Image (tube, rainbow, N blue to C red; front, side, top):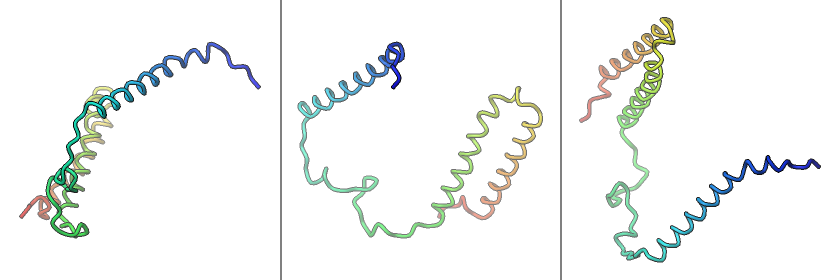
Length: 125
């Protein structure tokens, strides 16, 4: 059985103190809110709701395909932005090969966007 060095345990003291302070503060605030907070439930507050509206039909209704198309388009262009920001920030250091690689990537996404536009995925009736 190895003897633990005193200095090794002392390095964890700030972490333990931080966790203890956070737990104590959380419990104190929780108890204060339970003691001082006013609770006035009524049937309207306790009623289930979705997006602020009362339910009006079965929850297992089929969605229009256009919802999924918009979601896919959002994901595609969200990924584009996620790649574009670091690329633009490091443009001077990455070189000409990376520049043209990103131009090809943006070209493919532009072709996909034009295709979706021509197919009417962006039209909403």
